[in-house]
Amino acid sequence: MSEPDGERPRTPELPEDYREVFLSQVSVVTIAEPPRRNSPLVLFAVLCIVLVGIAWIAVLGKVTSGGLSTTVEGVAYAVGENGVGERPRADPGSLTELAANPVLTPGGTPRPTTCELPDLDTGAGELESYYRKGITCLDEAWRPVLTSVNLPFRSPGLNIADDPRTKCGFAPHEDEATAFYCARDKVIYMPRERLIRDAGDETAYHLAVLAHEYGHHVQAQAGILRAVQDQERAADEDEMLELSRRVELQANCFAGAFLAAVAGNGSVDLELAQASVDSFNDTMNSDTHGSRKNQAAWAKAGFTGKSSASCNTWQAPSDEVK
Image (cartoon, rainbow, N blue to C red; front, top):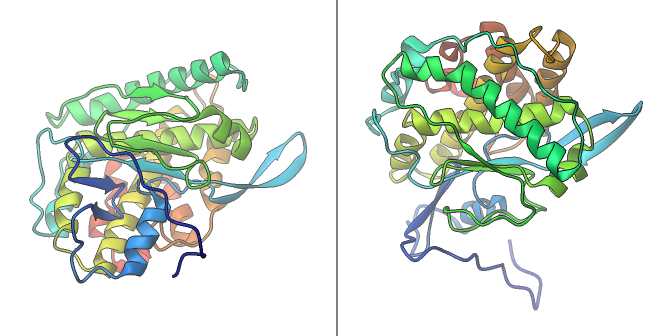
């Protein structure tokens, strides 16, 4: 794909110790000469997605607000470098090793949680409060899943700034991502103007995006992101894209498992929880995030299975992660 005359791709600002930025799990983008097996098309696609794409919650989705149905554009990204790096770290040798991660095998059930969320308001203070309350609920639900298998637990940070700086080096442009997670600073980025632009005041969409990004945080703490990064170093183009899809679809599934844990409790009634799960169906086919069918299927798998063991995309056949 050629660049229009007179236009050059944006050059991201990079940290001093930058060597490579782990784009979600799409692939490793290296400043040095890229591996010869990676075609310019794939590298260009990765750079366009900028900072991985974890969470494809409504790339092109329909958000209903005030009785009107509108089409929204946007992607929730999970970007990171070096995952978490804490223990345990999966051997990068095979998908079998990733499937054996203790968060997945034997896995655990997010704790049923009474989640008391304020009414969604798009004002800066109000929206941040809503997300922080949501993270408190996510912490309560996911903490026992991690600690029960002797994994470290740490609540993620939150940033709703419209043009945030991250330890991952650079953030995706607003036209490239709605929200994203940086594994290096363990912060969930929910840029306010982007979310308002893409989701308006639709509570189900905001909750689904937040739950998906938190799913990447769980992956980071479990060492999954780090292990996938290691695998990408030896992967060809098709393999890198499949790794990306397995990561993204798993985050969808983790979001579904959380929504099951809070459904019918507190301010998250069954209708809101189901609407949040259904929002994963408002997507488009993607080489990095999976088909629309599979994106919705994995969110539903987490919601109905109610366990992280239901989210083992690493042992799923390829047609279930296309």
